[in-house]
Length: 335
Ligand code: SF4
Ligand code: SF4
Ligand code: FES
Image (tube, rainbow, N blue to C red):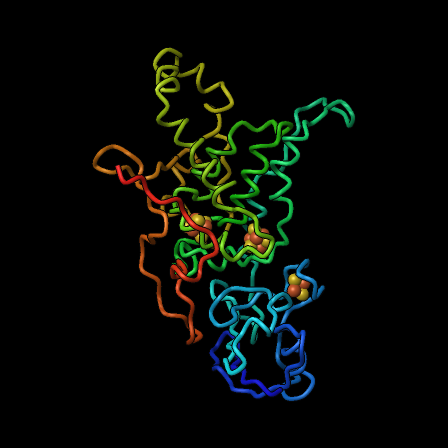
């Protein structure tokens, strides 16, 4: 049957949503429709894709305002008379049509310290428990589609946050390495908090909602990392340790030396104090804000800053409205 599509066309200087009527057949996905458009009406429509199997992460786009993979979005999920609007990822600069410049993500990847096994451990010297393998296996499923990065309101509507915020994809990388028993860096959490901007995340779970690999980004990576940061800063035993041990003893410990070993951001435009970099070259550690009762704010499903209008017209609001979410938070205790 013929279906109505609206597709954003343009480049970095501007563009518009154009209307098309395209043939749709049973079993097709949105990427098939884009290919048919290219074959029949718009041969110059730019769109990235590669595997058409949900594994390469190239065909990320916004479909009816929701970040999705074009090759994994079945046409049968829409009503028969529903107009399907396709726009590029909104958090990254436009190159042309549906193709955006996602190099922000690669800059953040470069900044994340690599896996660091202890010196002298040779292949075969070390055995990982199955439970440790399974814990980080989930994070290895990431296909780098950057839908989570595009969805996160910290950068989606606030370009100015980009220099100091690595985003959910790199929080799972930090968590994976922090959970790795063979990783010798003891400062992954401090690094995430101070250099990757973990404190900006207010656990709205929008990133989890759009991940095509169903990685529990917030529950299994971000929240455990935040808990460990808080343990370090507010645990009374850690506080006592800081009172008992001399500063030089603490500074020589892995945690104590963490601040000095934190890398500065190398992202474009990140400089000095504005980027959170202190005089020593390390970013000062930020802690999440506390309520008046001295407890951490439970900010789930509440965005601290209002979102801006979509530059592409039709938009999906984040956090998703109640009916659109596929997970449920536990009901708060009435007592
Ligand atoms: S939970 Fe929300 S704020 Fe935190 S990284 Fe995910 S989308 Fe961003
Ligand atoms: S975590 Fe999920 S949404 Fe984010 S880049 Fe990886 S696969 Fe894509
Ligand atoms: S084309 Fe590879 S994920 Fe869609």
